[in-house]
Amino acid sequence: MTIAKTVRLGVAAVAIVTLLSGCITENQATPPAASSSTAATRSMSAAEEAVARIPGAEFKAARAWDGTTAYVIATLSATDAFSGDPAALIDYSLAQLASQNEVDRGRLVRFSFEAPGQNADTTKALLASLNIDSARYAGGSSLELANQDLDDRYGPWPAAVPEPPASLITKG
Image (tube, rainbow, N blue to C red; front, side, top):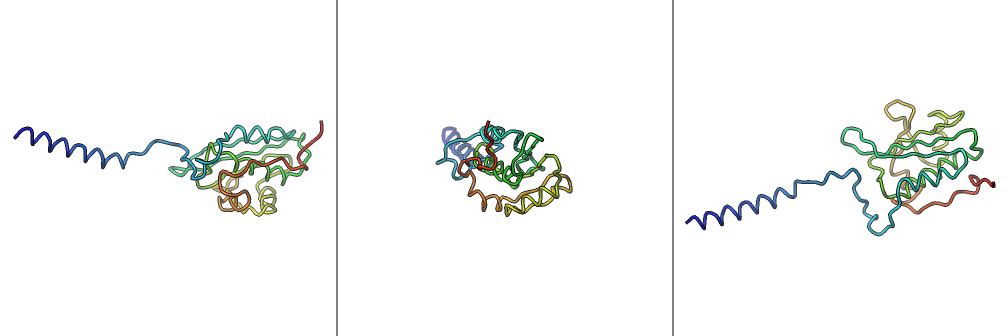
């Protein structure tokens, strides 16, 4: 009788563990993208370094959280040393962000462009010229970019690695 009871307890324990294992999730900050299994890995730092090759430009992006909602916070900076087209710089930087597959965009991209003469309104106008709709994020100086607009412009995440436009290449 004790063997039968032990077997029943063992079967019940296995069933409970099997059921509970479906409830346990890995604590993963960035879920893998559906297409990332076929794409080569490209890091966020590679995307940032590509933008940094443009004189006077710097791009930083990272995972952020709003409660339990994941998103990306991205900041593009340009100094007086940048002499190119600001819309082309924004476009190239966001294309670089779309091309990396280390950090998915989550629900949105929170974007800031820090450059001489730039503010949220002028950045919003530059984004509109690229057919990317934006809204002030929580009433602050950064802008919320919708993933659909980014997908429409750059392709599904992760997108192809962009070449720098001629208007951003300086000789020297």
